[in-house]
Length: 307
Image (cartoon, rainbow, N blue to C red):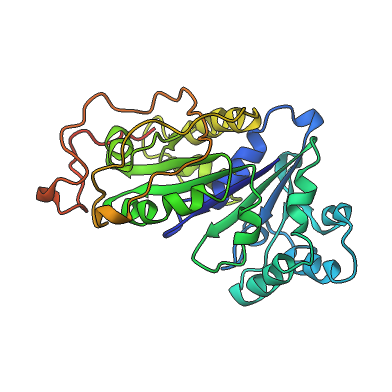
């Protein structure tokens, strides 16, 4: 199974999510888990976990010029805590992009999707920010499921809305995952016209653990563990294959802050069924597009709670 994780703006925690999902993946005794850094801007895992730069993405690209045996991908991986394997990318975007371009222009198809066809393997591909013409697009288009991770401030949602339709056509199973504080989930879902598959809480303690950093002091009770619980629930959802189904009912959304209505497109395909996170707030005092807030300043009333 190939799970692609990506964003369209900033750094909303795609790499952290990839590691969290790999560590929380069900049936680890019978599943080989691979976190693949295929972000053209470069990778972070080697630096965060104190790993050497090689073997990794660059050495795999060099080897792929000589052989197309998908089994050799594992020879270019390293071990993360919990037995997760990682294909690490160099920190520099120049070398990462060049290696990805080599893998993406293979005569048949990229190696990672071939590896992911093994029913005992799950590949969590961290594609970073999928800008137009990103060399990671060739891998993302082969995804069994694609998760678009976005923040929930007005500018985050504007960028997500502009790309939702395009990204959803890359995969039979698209999903929108929200992160952090900002507009209430129910408002985002209404304005974008699709349900979110979940919302990750602001949890710096767990995020630091998952990324090899020293844990910051917990500022208040309840900041430790929220991310792990939500990642585990999402992993269970992604691990279960779904049968094709009709697109979600509903009309095209009226608008998204900062995005002309004609640019807002509803994703098609088979959406990922949202797990029962219980993340929605009961109250939604204003619409996301309320002109009084100029589409960029969410009200503190009805704001998503931190975990």
